Length: 182
Image (cartoon, rainbow, N blue to C red; front, top):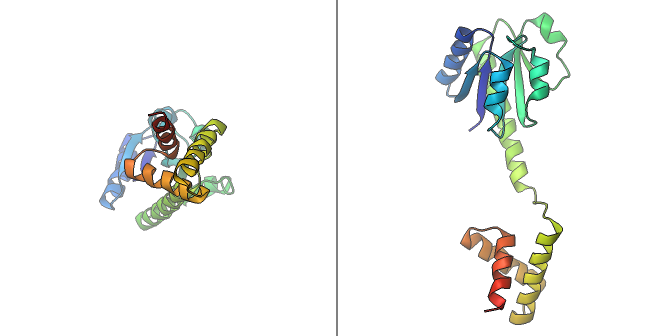
C-alpha cells in the first residue's frame, strides 16, 4: 500500500481531495495544511506520494520537495502559469482546475512506478559487510570439509536452511559454526 498525503493550505480543500481519492479506491495516509506537518508525518514512512499545491501556509512546494525523503514523490496541483516553472524538476504536475479522471490516472501511474521500484529494490542483492561475508565463507568451508560438499552445494544448503528457519543467511552461517563445537 502506497502512502498518500494530501497537503493544501485550506483544510476543507485537502479533505475534499481526500474524499475524491477514497471514493476512487485510494488509501490516504494523512491530510495536512503545512509543509511542517507533512515532514513530521513522513518521518516514520518508507515511501509515498505527496499531493500538494504550489504554496502552502509555511513554504512553497520546492522547499517541501527538497526536505522530503528520497523515496517520496510529489504531485503538484497548480495553474498552468505556475506549472511552467516546475517542468524538469522531477515533480509530476496537474493543471488546475483539476479533472478527477486525470488525478486518478496520474496517481495510478505513480503508484505502479513506486511498486515497480520496490520490487527492484527487493530483488537487488544485499551488500554484506566483510565480516558477514567471512562468516558465510567459514560456514561453507566447514560444510565442505565435514560433509564433502562442493562450494555451490554448501551455499545452497545454507540458503535452504535460512529459508526454512526464517532467518537470514548470516545468522544461518553463525548457527552452523556454533554447531561445529558441539
